[in-house]
Image (cartoon, rainbow, N blue to C red; front, side):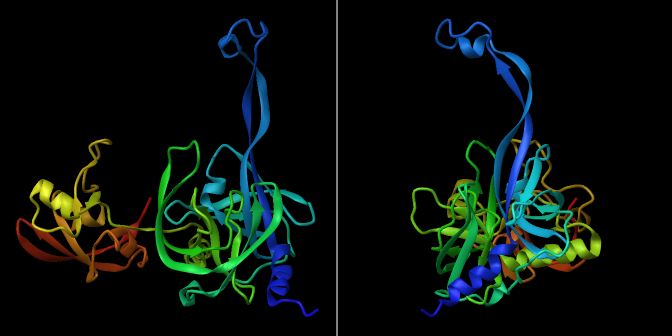
Length: 340
């Protein structure tokens, strides 16, 4: 029987897909009095010592034979945890986090091992709806080298993602939607095309929904890899304002002159200023209650936020802002700085 092209590309890719486990030392408690009454187990518990406990994990894939691995930032988000990479030959290596990008949920790891198999990176800007998408990863943290096949179901999706039991929520943009199964533990694994090239990094699934998974486009990670190679860190463009996106409801509630744009405003819950002192926005005189209508001639809307637009630029690029202030529109230009 002639083998499917999918079988061939999976066989080629799997040696470069790794499992990542996170462990940390946690305090172990003991109750010397036993169960005297309901709740007494915790009431009388005393610290017994610390024990290394597995707290999570995910997947990743090798993109450089000298041990460079791509995964999700949320897979390696705990700074106090130890991360171990498990290769297909059952070899285990401690991972060093070279960089992580909280905006795009990308992390770059390094292990001390050479001559490793790799997967080739593709071009996510050329994706089309309906093309084959193959997800590989460590499903549920148990089933290694799990393969699921589907298609590219959608492009440029936006979601708010988070992990169970954590308060942190991240707004992810420009995602690839796929019906190839993406399960917990698959995070960080590759989404590959029919040529075996990586087109995305599996990132999230939608609970209580079937056949809806999301992957970060690989071109986002390629930009981060270039920064690491050139600067030794990931560089993010920074404007230096806090804002809320306007809509019809906010326009009516606050009697604003427009229902589109970014209203420069403070964050009452944090008590932080609307315009960060010394920032590019501060240097050109952006003020609280200004409404930024456009950035580099792109309208700012809930579907195309200021952050979305800034991600298209590099540190050092000049950007033009169209600002509405007290009924008058003005143009300002500033140079984007590196986010610290």
